[in-house]
Image (cartoon, rainbow, N blue to C red; front, side, top):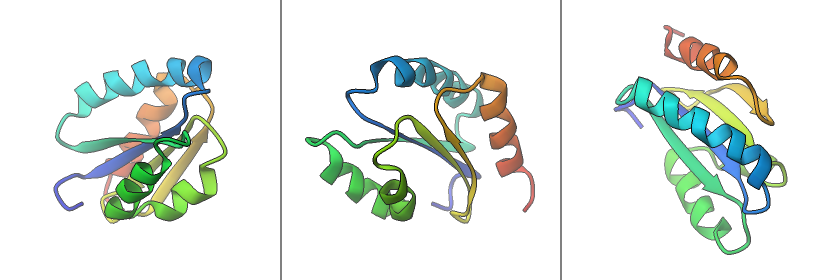
Length: 109
């Protein structure tokens, strides 16, 4: 943690091609825009990837978020630098919705 001002976590799986396919390009654009200020993490809940995703989630302090949302995809969590979940977005949204959530996460808490 520490080095980022906020974190965006996306939960998805292999079966989520249509909805997740709409979200991933938007998050990729946002990742370019926010570069070093926001960490973007993808957690794959597919059977062959869930163990690795659980390890990643634990290492960044979002295990509860992963556990609670593992059956849904896509789910985007926007976290403060201190790891507090500020916004949970289920399903594809417009870029402005994600931008707004990230902006709020980057403002002083």
